[in-house]
Amino acid sequence: MTTAVTTTDAATTTTAVPPLAGFTVGVTAARRAEELGTMMERRGAAVLHGPALRIVALADDTDLLAATRGLIAQPPDITVATTGIGFRGWVEAADGWGIGEDLLAALGSGKLIARGPKARGAIRASGLVDAWSPPSESSAEVLDYLLAAGVEGSRIAVQLHGEPLPDVVEALQVAGAEVIEVPVYRWAPPVDIGPLDRLTDTVLGGCVDVLAFTSAPAAASLLARAAERGLRDELVAAMCGPVLALCVGPVTAAPLEALDIPTVQPERSRLGAMVRKLESEMPARARRLPVAGHWLELRGHAVLVDGVLRPVPPAGMALLRVLARRPGRVVTRAELLRALPGTSNDEHAVETAMTRLRSALGESRLVQTVVKRGYRLALDPAAGPAPVGGHCLHGDSR
Image 1 (spheres, rainbow, N blue to C red):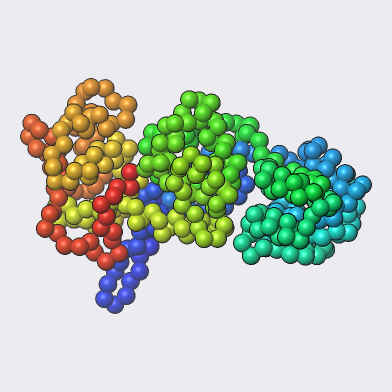
Image 2: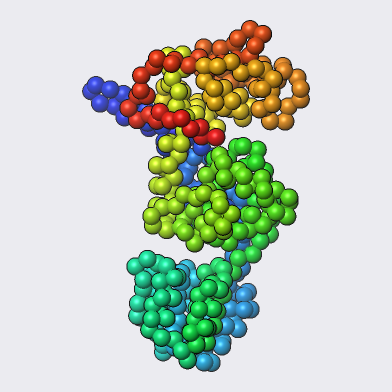
């Protein structure tokens, strides 16, 4: 439940609605999903979890064990650490197998490259020393650095970060290097696919405003599962339309952008920056209208009436979106009926949903009944600009 924050001084009392209040966010992550969801909930969002993948336990990963033993037997000239959690997990898994010291000795005999500050921190925490790290945290910049230095005849270990890096590996091999791919943690489909399917169905039902992705495999897995169910085209259409695709960075966004799905990303690939980006993005996407002496701001599953958050049932929200597309104009009952999810041809369903909508809004005059014709939003065409802090936009959050 969203709690408004009230501030009081000698002159005024204002109630600030959290920036994500009224919006629903679907989280597809497996790792750090709870942390991400909590940050969004603190900002007012309703969060739905539908993990699109799971992480294979390192201790049970025979591929990782084989790669580790191979590197101990024949140490690499260069090791590329791509993630902090991956490098730490690799060392911890090796410790569990009783070969941790041997692994560190093998890696320390060569040159260590860190893709970013977290990987660099993990290398140093293990007692090793990194030689270089790109300011961009980009695999492409790591590749450019290695190719510029020359890698012919070198044995290079590349710690993967949940998915293959075919472009990097192939470029190094073409340049004459022997590349050992180290699958430090691997993604697999979730054991229980139910939550992911429910999240997809909720998106297609029009009840999710944002899908959040923290890894490219999660985005690819969501699309692959939707394809198995014959729903991929519908899901892509939703993300090309009303549903915002929020990605932690460009690597994560790649599977979506390959399908021309627009994405929103923070400048820095961090969860906190990702949430702050959403915090600034969503209020600006809301629809704000002057209606019957009040200001209405349409959000995902709620409406702000003069700055007060009022949750609205899904059927009522469906009617309100249709009315808001043509504010001040009459919308017929037949057209409103078509907008209601899962209803029959009984126009009485419109009247029932309208009654609940008016009750949720707390002001019956906002939606007027036009006898024998339908309903209309009582638009104030001569109203001035929205109050300070509001958003006068022509778009709709849907």
